[in-house]
Image 1 (cartoon, one colour):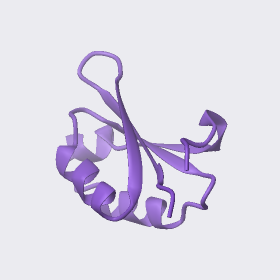
Image 2 (spheres, helix red, strand yellow):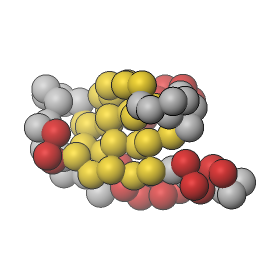
Image 3 (tube, one colour):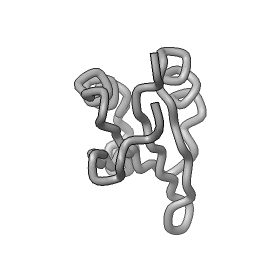
Length: 82
């Protein structure tokens, strides 16, 4: 499946969670598990979360990475074609 239209993506900014010393993965997990086939999730992070990308890719998600402002990253996740 190609990347869904950008207006089908929900945005989740994890920068504040990380800044407080929290672990955003449980909330990310909840959000990606709830995605419909034509939806995606944009994770905004203060660094490139390579382990997250690798984990979700191994579970059948596709991703696209973009540099945000400053040191921020935007990672788009959506379900890959079956």
